[in-house]
Length: 345
Image (cartoon, rainbow, N blue to C red; front, side):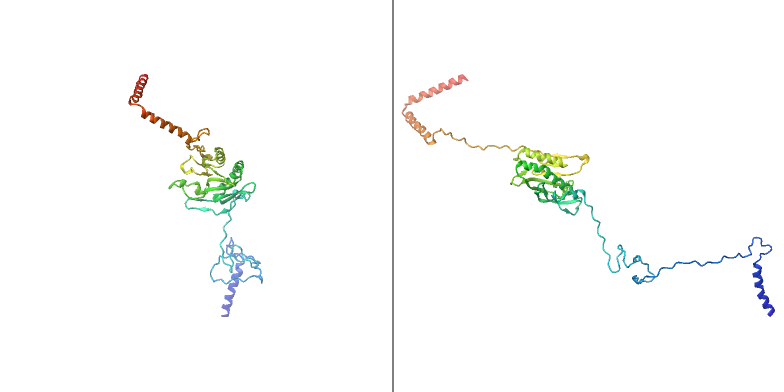
């Protein structure tokens, strides 16, 4: 038994020794194990220790993935991410960029505060709107717009330039500064001429204004369609508005504009413009039908009537005293005269 146990122990040792040397027929060294390289221990970096002033992480439910980003160092949360104690707030709307017209239309030119954009109904409304309350003239006096007009900034700027540059010289020639502008209509969501089913008017786009008159400080009113106003004054207004606005409608265009002037800045193909305003001649002044004055050299009516009455009284008895034969004589003469006239014709 002892001999057998020693034999079993010596067999693995012999096999191990035999593996160190290749066999006689092992040409390619397949049976011989290759020596392995010695393993080197690599240094793995460890995370830094957590600072004492760092906030404690909130308790999270197990097996649940959180979408929130970890807080930044120093205990400050990201401005884009709401904190645990502060609820999420709605982001403020982006500020609308101010237009060039709005920057140019200062309080030195017009009192025209901006108002929110109008959206609808339908295609009505517009952007960059103002409420034109007054126009400031170069001498710092104000022309009040009555009532205040809701217009686009470009249209309000055109009205202000027209009053400041064209109407001020006209009012100066009439001897009084301008005080008021009679606004008949500005923004109104409607079709053209208020006709049902018609195309949208420029009034519905806040791009038009209707004017009836310009009032002066001395109480005089320049009625743009007033035929009693001198023709040259109305023609000066006509030439000024047709040079500044793309549409001018007045008397003669249609019967909708017989008592006011329509102005707008409608954009058309090839910058086509419309100027339809007939400046009618003043109405003829007919003299009243009165009797002619009695001349100074004429006698009084009572004195002039008495001789006629006496002559009539003297003739009556003469006619009565005449005999029937004498009465027949004139009749014959008259008949003969009638025959003579008939012959002459």
